[in-house]
Amino acid sequence: MPLRFARRLTLSFLMLSLSGTIWAEDTLLAPLDQAATASGERQIRGVLRARNQAVISSELSGRIVEMPYSDGQSFAKGDLLARFDCSAYQAQLNAAQAAARATQEELKHKKQLAALNSVGRFEVALAEAHLAQAQAETQVYQVQVKRCSITAPFSGNVVQRRAQPHESVTSGSPLLEVVDNSTLEIYLLLPSSWLNRLQLGQTFEFTPDETGKPLTAKIKRLGARIDEGSQTLLLIGSLPENGEGLLAGMSGTAQLKVAP
Image (tube, rainbow, N blue to C red; front, side):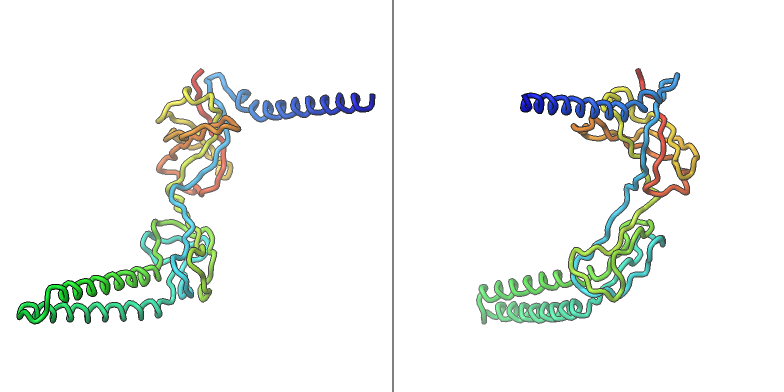
């Protein structure tokens, strides 16, 4: 009898837990349905994200010499964001360039001797191969020297400086987190049942919580897949050109007209 009682109690508890879970999910979805107005508009939460945002990392190991921009400061595309001590890489480049000049002179001399039939074609070909190798090594060191200076890939602002001048970092270390707030988009998670009830280019209203000013946005594109767990679909909306004062990470409420 105690064992049967325990089994019945466990089964009752599982059924109660399952019912509670379903009720909780219905409660989460209920505001979407209850928010429908007479015109068919529904409210849903969204967030602003920037198309251009990145964590700038070091492509080589070295000591940081210069980082002109701090948290919150703005920069233009092509501005210097970080510079490393490149004395060792520059010395290697100089040595490689000198070796390339020497092999070029050697090839020139071999060709003159070949014209006089003093050397064979093999020695000329070998000198050409040495020159090609020296030039390739020069290109490698040129790339390394170029990586000593990191320039901005787009105009924007520094979100956070992950490293400081005079610190030594390894290759792949994050240096700066940057964002371009002029490329903001609205990200919304919709019920998958709305997929065929919305159209690209359709306008909707989005009101950021931080400003309280309604903005007229447009449906720009839809996500490529439906989330299997939540049965939601990503919607990306474009903001009007006069959306000044907006920052990535702002959240707000969107009002969409959903066809029946």
